[in-house]
Image (cartoon, rainbow, N blue to C red):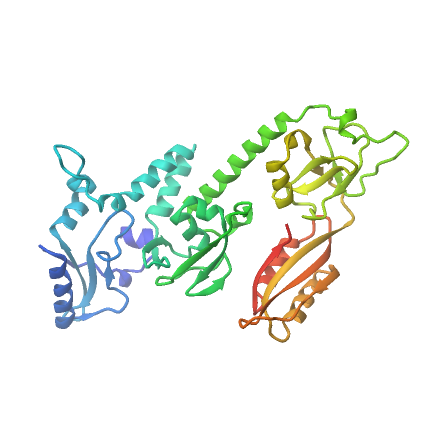
Length: 421
């Protein structure tokens, strides 16, 4: 009754009304017995589960098989060793080993208690008790899939998990630096739903600005979502510290920014600077071409005034890391609410050079009524027949750029699409 309510199943979908548990000394005996019972009774397809080779996250191990008896009724057999049975009945404390009196720590124990470490980590980072309980239910007790690393290691994930979930399961930094993924040797979108048996390889870059907030819309694991949120909480704290170092009043002679009052500076770019009351020269950075909706930051440049960059701009990050006193030249900027101009946006589209690809991309852009300022589509010069289309589009303020990029991404033979940063 509880299974029917909890899993939304009918009575006919409950196969373990009758169950038999068999306990053996060794794992070899378990697999031999599985072969014997399959010879004696017919197994139900899809109902054989090997939790010995691929344990559940909580360390549970056993062989499960559902068979049809001589009367045509289903029954389940669970086959396990004595150690597995103790672990199941009494928990990991039943065979916990620790360094005492010369005893060595069980090398397998570390893997068996990874789920406990995850719970402890959530306890530290999740303030709400209700949210904490929801995370445990979603990640620890959800249905699972099993995928492989390039080295053949087995990784268990939540059903419908994505390459991003896989990356963060391996290591937080791999998730933060992820720029792409291959599944079974082929490049796939980061929102691709993984299946049991997939071999997953994560592509990373040391210059990656970090995870995208858009990932929160499609990643499956609560743990993954929390790690992405942690990244942005840390980033926001660092940025707040940088802003605290900027003087409240930057209208000083050595800045070379404030113009004479006779020059009128209109807000033609749709950007406002809350910290400056006077008129300033303001330009949009050509290296990252920010548009409304992007997180932006201003940098005071002599002779150019306040140059507005995207916060993840590689050029700006390089300047902040290498130029003395560069933090003192940072100023807070914001987008205005009434933006009515067109902004240039540079995008790079990596494709397999096949007939009709460019035509399909242009058709999608036309559907959004966006102008194409320039396009450069050099022919392929490699064996893989891949090339990159370089485009500059004119996007209205608060346009639907992300929707456009997602639609182009699913065009056949489009391998990857990115904004020029």
